[in-house]
Image (cartoon, rainbow, N blue to C red; front, top):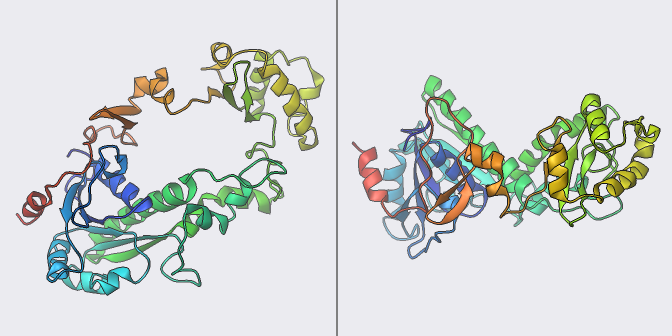
Length: 359
C-alpha cells in the first residue's frame, strides 16, 4: 500500500473496539498489518475496522504457536494487543519475551484501566472508563442523567488514537536509540487527556460541574442543536461576537436587545427557548439555504444515510464505497504520500506478507 507508513510492519492481536481501530489507522496510512486471530474466525464484509489487513489464523495455545509468533515478531516493528493485563505474558508473548527476540519492537498495549492500578484487572467498557475521567459527567442535558457519547471518547478518541500517537512517538524514538519500548495506552488516561481544556476552564472559574450550564455543553443558546419545522435538526456554534452577530442578523434578531448580553449565562435558558421558537419556523433545508456556508457557524444535523451524500463530503471524498460498503475514507490527508483507497475486509494472505518481511 501507498501512504506515509509504507514499510512499517505491524502485528495486531485480534480483539474488539479500540485496538482494531488503531490497527486500521496504521493500515490506512500504508503500514503492513497482520492480524492474528483464532482459527475459524469469520470476518464480516461489513466489519470496516478490519480493512486493509492480512489474516494469520493461529491457535495461540497450540503447541508451537508461541514460537511461530515470536518468529513473526522478530520481523515486526510494532505489536498491538488489547487483552487484559497478564494475558500476553501467560501466552509467552509478553514484552520481555518479545524484546528478547526483537529489541527494537514497539509493544502497544490497549486497555481500559491501564496495565496497573486498583482496577487494572476488572472488566469494563467505554462507558465505565470515561465515567471515572470526569468526561461522562459533563455530557448531557441540565437536570438529566449523563448521556453516553456512543463509544467515541473512550474506545476511539481516548483509546485507539492515543495508542496510535504513542506507537508513532515510540517508533520515532527507536530511530535514535535503537531500542523498543512498551506503550501503555489506557482509555481512562485518554479520556482524561481529552478533557484537558475543560479542566483548564474549570480552574479559571469558566466551567462548573452542572451539566448543561456551560458554553460548550449545550448550556448556551448560541452553541446547541435546534429542531426545525420538519422535525429535523440544525447545529449552531456561534461563539465569537462577529459570528453571533451574523446569526442574529440572519435569524431576524439583530434588533432584539434580549440577545445583546451574549455571555450572560443567567439569560441563556430564556434565550434558548426564544431561539428554539425561531428555528421551528422553517424546515432544515430552508435554514441551510439561509445559513449554510456563512460565518454563522451553522450545519445541518445529518443522519448516517445523509452524511455521505452531503456536497461538502462528496467534494472531499470523505466517504468511499468499498465492496458495496459505504465507509469513512482514510484521514488525515497527505500531500505527497497519499494512501490508497482502503481495501475491503482483511485477507487471508499473512504467509505471503511474512515471506516479504523476511526478504
